Image (cartoon, one colour):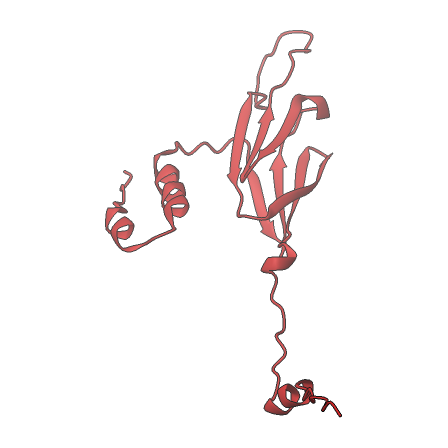
Length: 155
């Protein structure tokens, strides 16, 4: 049984958080599909990795796209099997996985090996958003920069 949370009291007392509330509401209503299984890892303060089990899928059967803050991974296996299955235990069904990314998080690399799709992500803050040190001037520094302009006396 799922409990649906009501975020309307937070909407009344918060400004500028609409995107976060939208993400939370969407997460409640999305059906939980566990195919294909995946891991998300934080490698450092600004580096992440998504590893997804895609056994049996070839490179040209998987598509990775990114639009704004949404990473979409699609897979659809082409039917190239000869013969008749007596037992089918490996799932080759098509899939779509969506990941909402924080602002300034970008895909840096994607690699497929040994049935694992690894997608590397990095947060790259623009220079204007990075912390910077502000120098503090003393009163003496201000006085030293002020020059007296002397008036020339006409003779």
